[in-house]
Image (cartoon, rainbow, N blue to C red):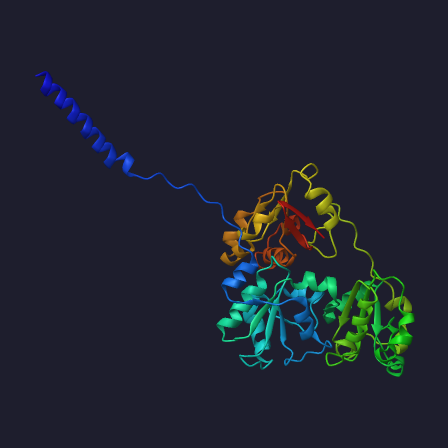
Length: 406
């Protein structure tokens, strides 16, 4: 009996082990969540078989500043507002979020599928140029490459180009020097009011008339998009150490066609009316310190107060609209991440993700995506409380876990 009893206990124990093996032990423990590894845009470009090109290669495409498709075609993948403010000379706009809008104009260029095309955007952490490059390849263009360093790198080494709207904005604001690079006789007949004359063909003797301030903004122009004179003057000014040179490529023909004022030899015919700067907007009594346009938060205030955990007001939230793979190098303290790609889901899906109260400041790597999110909320979603939303119009550099902006 004792033997039978012991056998029963052993069999019961084995049965229990069997049940446990088929039950709890049979279910493997869930694997710990793995952190998302940061994938650089360079790595994504390599995976997509899109070759990267350096500044020198882009500079060859720009050439004399007059577009020539035999040298190559530059495509700016940033938003229209950013492109208007400054882009690489000869570049055409094809914003990654509005490719269909710009596609007809691109097709009018008449490029062959084998023609050389280089896309760019806001620097090494900007994915927009890759999106456009991949799209072009999908359409059958076989010689598409990327200038990964993009506009931040270009601005350090050469002059930019602006649109007519931007040129007019600076003209109305005042305090900016326009430079007419055409011959003196043509300049004497008519030019943009207030301009100085630095003819490209008389550069060596005329350059002494350049203002001494090399930190101010200068806008060379000449006879339109087919005119290389302004580009020559701009290039020479950069070599002399002038830091902010932006060519207005449309020049006098475009300016005149728009009905904007012209005057003999740079003079202003009605000084009191034409030269007076517009009245400054009254200081806001509520909200955050504003930059040049509604919705832009002052970069200085962002860095000194909002980005400092010890000083950031409790009712201000930083929303990082970069993609998840861009966050590995660092984020601003206390910020939350909502990718700009979420806007594709529509207002009803995107707006509920935002803070319900307080001020919200969007930022990305170069200001483009942050502006797009702000415009999406203002123009598409038509938020009644848009006044509590802002965006940082600056280049943000994150490394070693920390971020800075300028």
